[in-house]
Amino acid sequence: MATPTAFPCPDLRDEVVVVTGGSRDIGAASARRFAELGAAVVVSGRDRTALGTVVASITSTGGRAAGIAADCTSQEDVDALRAGGEAAFGPATVLLAFAGGDGRPEPMSQLDATRWRAVIDTNLTATYITVRTFALGMIERRRGSIVTMSSTAGRQPGGASVAYAAAKAGIVMLTRHLAVDFAPHGVRINCIAPSAIETERLVELMPASAREQLAQAFPLRRLGSVDDVASTALFLATPESSWITGVTVDLTGGRVTA
Ligand SMILES: NC(=O)c1ccc[n+]([C@@H]2O[C@H](COP(=O)([O-])OP(=O)(O)OC[C@H]3O[C@@H](n4cnc5c(N)ncnc54)[C@H](OP(=O)(O)O)[C@@H]3O)[C@@H](O)[C@H]2O)c1
Image (cartoon, rainbow, N blue to C red; front, side):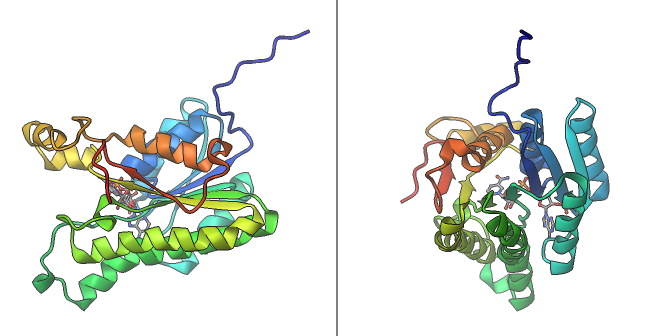
């Protein structure tokens, strides 16, 4: 009898994973992790060059990936992302709705209604559009797992702008609310709320000494890594967490939020 070929665990070869915010940092690391475990990955973002780099890093090591550019604040773009992903690999079984950002500190005096709407759109509205677009098919097929992206900024007041904090807090409630709606249809949705993650962007912006000082503020005495987020996403997206839905995992190196 032939010896079965060993495959890393969990075996994701039957999964089609869509990652928004996949063009860099957290989303790119998550796309790579799921692809390493056999999933077909649809990587999305707005920057086509960055998408090409992520897709090449996956396919050059034998993984399956396609890059589809989409602005997640646009229903039309997200519809095209869903259709393009289905044409490439079939319907999504996992959605990592990670697109977002722009949480830079801005005092309320400078944050007018236009800026407010832009930050809410980039984070909360984009997440709603993306989740709704993919969840409708998952519900029909009675199969799917969704992970959304909040932030410590949405869990307790801190240095980020109030618009970003409100948007990320909104994603926590969006997740809790939709978890109850989706549960009878066999679809789960959970959320990750990271604190400081050592992304390429952070490394560019902050010198090593400042990052080291920031790390000391965390009980585990280091910053989070993009792989910490990918591991959490993997747990939440796969049957390893099959009795968990509606939760937000605070990924904070021991800085426990209330
Ligand atoms: N880094 C942290 O410490 C941290 C902590 C808490 C939460 N988060 C959250 O984690 C997620 C990823 O963060 P990151 O640090 O990896 O950020 P990043 O390096 O700034 O990447 C943001 C990602 O979101 C995409 N994106 C932004 N707006 C979009 C839009 N309207 N439509 C489609 N894609 C859009 C970007 O795509 P393009 O550049 O291709 O447009 C990019 O792939 C964000 O939601 C962020 O708020 C990060």
